[in-house]
Structure formats: structure tokens, C-alpha cells
Image 1: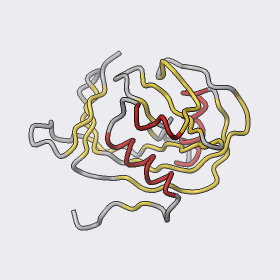
Image 2: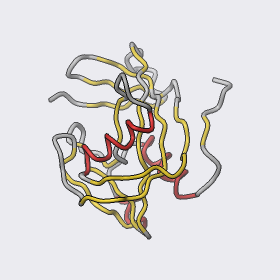
Image 3: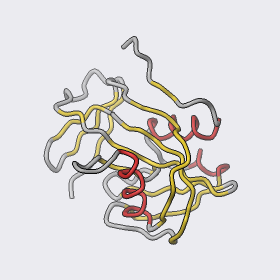
Image 4: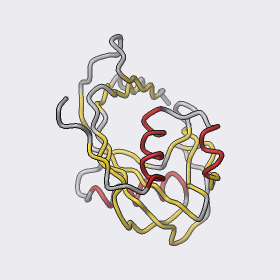
Length: 160
């Protein structure tokens, strides 16, 4: 398995060679948030992944959450749309450099138990107070902070 390397506002970052929609889920249960420790970079994140042909983007969020965590969810809202062109992700397995394009939905657990997968070394209900202590990419922190603030959906600035 290759690595995932995120670059933010880095003039030395490789140029994006693809854009692929992705979806993720912010799943909160009381004072805990469902998070995974990614197997490709060791960072903690919300579950999510790339959109597949033939499915809706909301179905992507539900499918990826189940695949990565073992937890079934229903979607109940939208956290935001994150498409910052200054954030690129380098997948070393195939040398793809993807511009960020992620829609984060709000979800509620409907079944299942946290179970690691090939994409996650750990899956946990993390207390909100402990999230700041986790190793996490800045894009995930931004998304989680926005979701916890329970604001209108985030929309990237259109000026860039």
C-alpha cells in the first residue's frame, strides 16, 4: 500500500493531476465523534472516501463509513463542501495528486460497532475533548471544528 501525503499552501507541493469527488461523514454520539486512524498515513480522520460511478455522493458517505468503521449510518444534514485548490493529496501508490474535493455530511449511527478495516488501524468513538490531542491533518481539524460549531454548511471561498 502506498502513502497519502497532504500538502497545504505548499509552493513545493506537486501539481494536481486529478479532481475526484469524495464524501465523508461527521458522526456524533453525545460527546463523542466517530473517527478512524488511517492506515496510509497514521492520521486520525472522519470516515470517507472517493465517489464511485453509479452512486450518489450521499451514498458514498454511507458506504465509506460502513467500509472503514463497521458502523451503519443515516445522513441527517450537511457539514460543508471543501474544495480548496491549495490543498492537494499525493497518493504514492499511483502518483495521483488530487485536488481536495470533499463533501462532509452529518450522520447518525443506526447499527454496527467500530471495527478497523484495511483503511483504518483503529476506529473509535473519540471524546470531543480529546480530539485536539490526536495526530490529524489540518483539513480534518477544519472540518471537525466546523461540524462541532454547528453552523450553516461550510462553502469554500469562491474568490480563489
